[in-house]
Structure formats: C-alpha cells, structure tokens
Image (cartoon, rainbow, N blue to C red; front, side, top):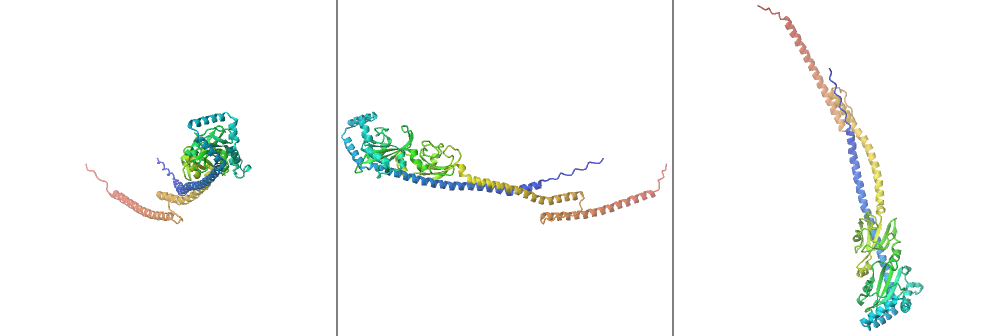
Length: 459
C-alpha cells in the first residue's frame, strides 16, 4: 500500500505585510510625532501671542480707567476748594468748638430727629441752601455752570452727592434719601482721617435704597490754610453705569472682552456678568489680582465655564494707591476670550494637517505595498527554486535582474544548482558502475556453482 504523499507546506505570505508595516512605521510614526509636536508648539505659541496681547490690552485699559478715575477725582475735588463752602464750614467748625460734649450730643440728636421727621426748615436749609445750589451747579455741568463742566456719564451715574461738616452732619445734599449723621461711617472716617484728610474710594456694595450696586468717593474739605479737614464731600456712583462706557465697548472676536474686578473677585463692570457677582472659580482670584500686569493660563474662564483659558490682567496702579488705603482692596482689569475661539486657528490647522497626514499615510501604504511586492516577488521565486532543487526537479537557471543582493543570491543558487547537478551526475555513473560489478560477480558466482560436481554420499 502506497503511503500518502506529504502535502506541500503552506506558503507563508507575511513578508509583504511586514515590509508594508515597516514602511508605514518608518513613514507614519515620524509624521504622527511631527503632528503632535507641531500642535504642541502651535498651542504654546498661540498662548504666548494671545497672552501677551491680552496683557497689553489689560494694561492699556487699566491705564485709561486710571485716567478716568483721576479725572473724576480732580473734577469732584473742585467742590472741596469752593471758597463759599470752605468759609461756611469754617464757621460751622468754630460754632461746634464752642459746644461742650453734652451740648453737641443734644444738638446732633435734635437735628437728626428733625431730619428724619422731614421738618421743612432743615430740609430747606440742606436741600435748597447755598451749598445745595453749588452741588446742583456742579452736577448740571456745562448747562448751568460753564466753569465746572463734568462728563454726561458722571452726571447720569451719580446717585448721591452731599457734604458733611466735621461733626459728620449733612449740611448740603441733592436729595433727602441720605442719613443725617455719618461720623461712624467707614467712608467718613477714612476721608476725614482724624482731621488730616485723605481721598477715600469705597468698595462696591449693593445699595438697597437705590436698588443698584454702588461705590463711593469721599474727599476731605480742608480749611483755608490747608491745615485740617473741616468737612467731607461724599459722592455715590452707580458702578455699572459709571464704568460700562469705558469697558463694555472693548470687544474682540465673538467672546473676547474686558472686565473690572476687585481683589475679592467681585465684578465691578463686565459686558457678560452682572455687577456685584463674584467670579465663579475662586482659584482664579490669586492668579489675576497680583500687583503687576501679566497673563496666565487659567483652569477655567471665570464666567461659569470649566474649560481652561488664557487671561490677561493688570492692576489700576494709580487708583490702587487710594483703594488699598481706603478698604484694603485693589481694582484689576481682566481680559478674557473663550478657549474655543482662542485655539480655533491651531485646531483648524491641526485638522487640515491631520487630513493631509491621513492622505499621506494612505499613499504611503499603497506605494509601500507596491514596493514590498517588488521585493517579495524575487524572493518567492528563489523560494520556489529552492523547493524544486530540494526535490531534485529544478534544472533551469534563475534569471533575476534586480541589481542588488537578491540578484547575487540568485546567481549563488544557480551555481549551487550546477554543482549539485554535476555531483548528482558523478554519483549516477558510480552507481551504474557498481551495479555492473555486482551483476558481473553474480554471473561469475552462478558459473562457478554450475561447474561444481554433485557430491557422492558414502554410507
């Protein structure tokens, strides 16, 4: 029974795949690394460029707002140098100095009761007197007194304006919606400053009487010799209405804007967030309220978003000198733009680069497959030739014109085939000779055996 012929070994076709994979790794891996490095470097440069731009915008806006505050301070200070006001307050000071503490306390109590009771005499003196006329002329600006012009914005943002004497009593006011005594108020103490006098800017707070968030400016009124404070001028501003014309107009892109905050993170003015609200992420406060200009990557945008962003910041340097002494707080400009808009150019660039990269990888795979077949095909021919030689079937020489090591290998296989063929031919002749010798010996043996006589057996 014939044994079954061995099945030919299954041809392995992994070389082409390996070559294509190698080419893909060699070509695509550097491309991928290059894309990642380009995206990282582009992101860093976008951050640097936008951060520097935001810092410059915050610095310039802070400088302009410093000028607005300085101008407002100077214009309001004109009232503190009015000769009529100073002379009247000096007379009031002299009259108060003649009262003993008990008499002063009784007088203040009686006047406060009269003010709270809306008595006509005291209302007439405070709301319609000479001081009140000066205040009205000041607020009226160019319409009533060309010598004291003030911006329309300041007039519309003013929610209260009154003067107190050294006892803290209101001696003139634009309206009656103010308390009569202020000697215990923080702004009064800060501006009067034990008779020395200094400017005071209050922190933003909600005014329940007026229904808006306000900040205050208080200035001391010095005597004729500039020796001591004899009264305090107090002005109340609607914070949003005062700052918005200088801040809300600064917009860039779809989301970029500037906002004014204090060192507590409370919003004084912002086109998006309401005045008086606090920055949602308290981690931003120490990042954006240093006493220098700069920019920083931030963990959130401060407007309720959780995505990282870039924020530029700058303090109001000149105003800070007053607010820090007054309340311990400082004011800062905050420049922000959504991260989606900030990084849109680099993301757009990355998407197009990735698209072209994928096309390049596809082209690389196609060309790699073609190149791999050109390399693998001669090797497969050599493999088939080796199998035929192993079976003793291959006789024709291999013809390959690759011009490289594979062609040299084919030449070596051809030489090996020739050597094996010559060796096989020599072996065949030797085998034939041995066969003939064996036949000769066999014939000789038969002849000898035929000539031997039959043996005779003796019993």
